[in-house]
Image (cartoon, rainbow, N blue to C red; front, side, top):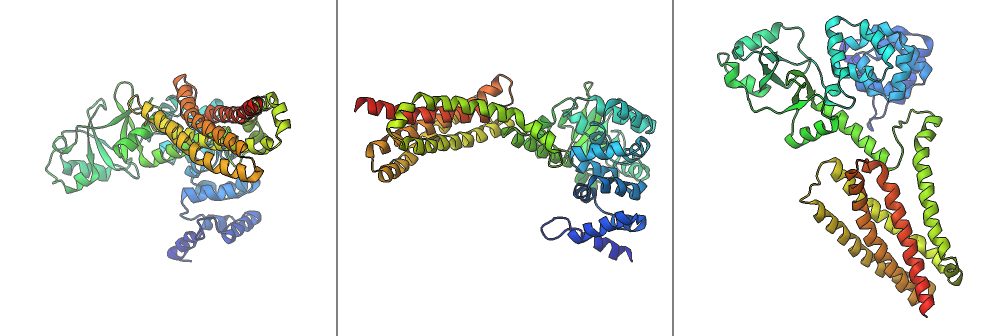
Length: 464
């Protein structure tokens, strides 16, 4: 088979909906079962690391182990950065430390750090000891930075040049340097101590004459990120300044690496994934986790929700006599609580996102509180008219329709305020609003909703 035909075969790995081709996977499974090393390696010829990751997640654990054995030194270890943590740790446990050391030394430093950081320290130290000294020092420096920091996500490979060179000398030097990163977007001008003096974008370099001095071409107004900065904060800087690549410096302002847009895309996806899971109380869970781990990650907040549900039910118990007099209340009051809950969650989602994106400050916070309160009030009036009319017709009771309408206005307005005030308050006291807000917001809307319906009904029956 020619190289072109073989490459085309890999291009057909995915169907139109970007899912793994069933035929390709079944062929791979057959080759793995037969121990056909040549056919397996042929299937993985020039396959992208992301696609290799998809394949690993599709296979069963025993098939993954055998696949890596058949691929041998043809396996691209950067694929381990593309799979769920549970699968990655399973494969690392199954691989000899010497193979892991060889594999991570052949990939970009940011991917290598991502793989190594989840390994237990004794095992990690043994792996690092088997890596060449210069690469080992670079990886250990990145691993010494705090977890979820820019230093952990940075790539140690970058192009640093002296300011006294001209463009021609710089290009000639890069042509013979075999240690250059495979991809780069800009060149960094540094002094002998690696203090960052400026940057040169590739498009500007390509347009420059060979005789121009680097110091004349460089842009000295540079944005740089501290290696200890939280990765989420680094992502905000990328978003705010529309960056593609940025220098990372240590506490002495010496350049130690670069963050590129592909690193930041991973950070954004990771942070969004964490926030979505936190909003519903799932925790750090992936689709490859076992039943036990999934149950464990969800139990805590389900238990909290049970407690808040009991609190809401206790409100209903206070008005059992009222419900006995008008059974229709038992049918209608969940509507008010449910509408309030949904409205509160909508506002809470907007607020949590604004907090995470750093869009809230003292200038617009009160404006947002007022807006969400008015949104809740207006929606409450609209749906009060609807539910009031439906209730009056359904139960032939205009008074009950009025009670439902008033309760709807009250709960929707409270939901709007709770959806913004609760996340802001939690954030103020240092509690992640994405984790705790939903339980408190739904509790408030349930309690207020039930109390409004039953309290108004009790007041009505007491007066008339």
